[in-house]
Image (tube, rainbow, N blue to C red; front, side):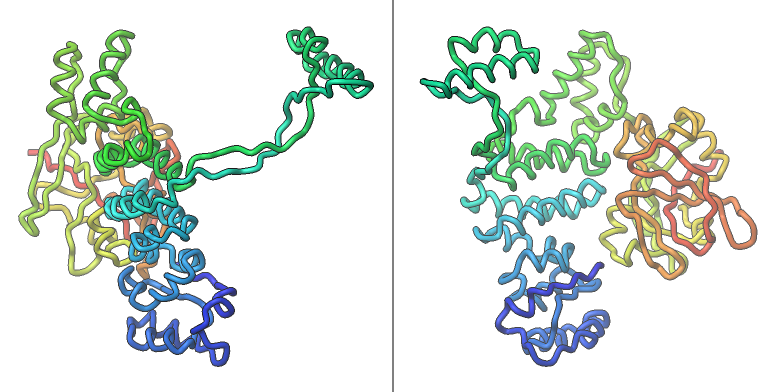
Length: 461
């Protein structure tokens, strides 16, 4: 978690002492989880900046709630995650905190776009609070510099000079119609400032974020985005035609049928995640041969977790990241259990080799090569495999990042990394990577002690 200095904090909050600053002691208390000491330091004013480290959201609120309330903008800048998840509902109920509430909405939308369902649950609560705060609904007036045609003076020499400018300016812009109108209604093209009314920035951010988010989010949270869109369509003035629903699917399928075009696989899978039986009925009624992806479901007897399995070009793949907790060699991103729920666990290569349940094994380098060929070649395959791409095969590659030997985690929401069984020398192994915005699936060499995701493949009988 980044720590941001808040210079104005010392001068703006009366209860913060301008005497002794014990910032190092605050860092030590926060990092060691000694919340009682941290609370005392804040209460006595023995700090010069807000520091949250890796505190849980509720713990951060417990330490800093008074500061969060009095200085929401600075607090969000210092502790964006803790503030958004722990204090978002309260700040969005404060009519004077439009900027901070908008920042919270943006932060949670971005986490949701990375596939974090917890972010969308938090966003739901925050949106309810924000939409109840009447002050946030007010349009915003802005002064905008622009250039426009303005009527000339009505009399005298000024009118004559303006008429000449009207003709000259129309000529320079090749505007024949305007030139012809100059004698009757002379105007001049001038720089000016006008007042423009724009929708509430918070309403605009929430409406656009939900609409765009549905189409670009990982498949695992697409249904949640659709649900939020339906819930907030009316207050956000989102038209029915822009809301994914079974009626939307009907119109979509009819349009492709009328145009004799193939159904885009990624869009189909996105609809199927929410309305599979009804989608198949629509496709059958329109005489499409295509149907929603068919999944097997297996339960890991070791911990009772269920996984989806799909046949892709003859191989039966897990289309979720493995989330089995091994005593050694596996961790959650940032050592946070919520990340395991969203993205699966991360494993060292040695642990990955034995992590899959009975009847399945770690996907091999050969498995990945065949998958890449089937998906159009390694240079293009990510588009058809990543969960925010076309995802034609419902592979649902999640961008859960990785962790180094020390458990330091990075690239969540951006990169997906998967172990294979293949060694690359004594200390390194071969893995696959793909990124949320790139087309390529890359074969990479990685330290065997790094923690990456695992996809399992069914052992052939």
